[in-house]
Length: 294
Length: 237
Image (cartoon, rainbow over all chains, first blue to last red; front, side):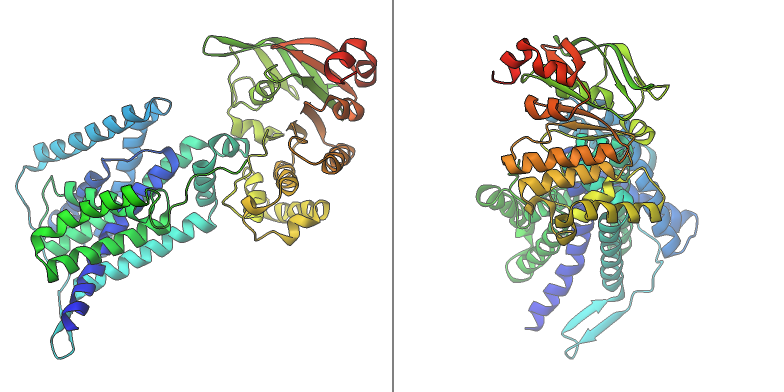
């Protein structure tokens, strides 16, 4: 019982990181039908910005988090403008290949500038352990930070998407671009905003992970990027609640597998989930089958 | 009366296909002008070109003295043209109220928007009953009313309507045409595209007949309705 509880706690913290990342995939897919494979690298850059902010500029945690989110947002907008916008009317495969190219560019540019070595974050948060059930279940303050910040960001996102003007524009553009234009919505600006929001979430995930695991490197975005992509498909690509649920479930499944079976299987399990979902329910847990009512 | 909208020798291409081959037309303030023609004649293309969704290769479009040929769709909406698109194209996963709010996207006057939503509800009481409902669950007639209400939310001076009667039961078609007349009486100029030529000619002041990207005939609607050529081709007689 205590082991299960402990694994679930760990799973929720890992899962909320996946969820933050999966949101970016799903939002971008929803609006331009692109799996943005450079998304995991925006998360990596977010971690590096966090490193610069804390280790070199000496900022505290919250200012570093905000700075990292802001710069990641700008990076996301720049990627969209430079790489994807010129291909808006090209085939999807051209866009996908460009995304992979952008991913490699970000990884190896970072490696060129920052070096290939792993760097360790300074301690910006005092990490305390809280124990329950006579020490059998532990949660660290860092895990709590991850959880609280992720939940706050997801609530904020839900508010933006459901209640604000730009959120409504994003939903309208993802449903029907021409009709959205007839309302006076500027499609380019709206797509830009979508990249900014998704990338800011990735940047937040990057700095949280950097501080939690205390190490960052230029290729750190690859595996979490793929996992978050799986989480997005699992939950239903294009669906925002789906990305949240998919991320949390994937995190919990992975930690349960490492806890009860063997931690070597956890990556395999994620990809097995992807295969099963694609075979059985390609629209994902919360995704809609795209049947247009005319 | 002064010309509100003027299309001057518009040419539109889809790749190699010359879809619109030199259309010139005029809509004057206060009128209902109908654009009739067969499938593929270029009616919807003409409306989408006016809205800025499609760029003409040659020619110019003037609206209330402004050259709008190269303006973005958003700027054209702001100048006072909105469209009820073919097939309604409402945002089916959003609520009725959200659809109406999106219609007012370019406006910032909150009180005016709230007032206009009330006005739309007065015109279409069924939309008020269903304001929190997802628009995709509405019936075809209700969706058409929502599409019209949404277009009115931009406070257009000129309303473009693309096949508003399409797919509706005859009783609803009558209702929609009544609504079009009411909107026009309230001061909005209307350019109407219709396959239902009979109804379109019955409410219009003037009309244009489009054939394969060209204007074949034009004139007062009642004269066109009596024209043997039009009767044979479009009025089933």
